Image 1 (cartoon, rainbow, N blue to C red):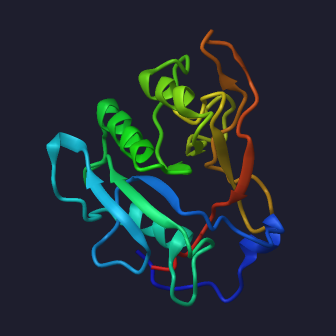
Image 2 (tube, rainbow, N blue to C red; image 1 turned 90 degrees about the horizontal axis):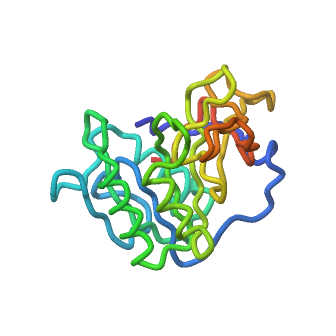
Length: 212
């Protein structure tokens, strides 16, 4: 994980953001974070294969957590948020859907206002069990989910980002152009037809240096 930090915050220029989420709880389902870490972590838990080790072996979860919530300078975009971080992927990748679903439920049980999911799998007809779990809870929890990395072809939005009520995020570069790798819509709906407008938003997602 890079410890470097950009000399200018180009992301805020693109998004025109003047304030960030400062609520009590957010959750991040990915590869967890390293311990110790410079973010406010409410709890961490590993879900795959009944594994008890929740440190980050791949660096992905730590990278995302630093962007969100690093408290010391330079701060993340929401330094006052508490992260509940569920590790649903082993270090070599390849999560089971049951582990992802259990991770989502754990986030919900911990009263997470936002569930951030930097993960995805081929969507098929977008009616798998992870999508169903997101849809069942999307009225009470905001699910912010990656569009995927299968661009530039169209209709490549990953599951569970294809879920109708998820806030699905694509990636743009410093020129505010859609990243070549970012998955495109339209997304497949439960009927198997590509008729769902996705992603819902795009955000800076190319060469992003984490604050960890």
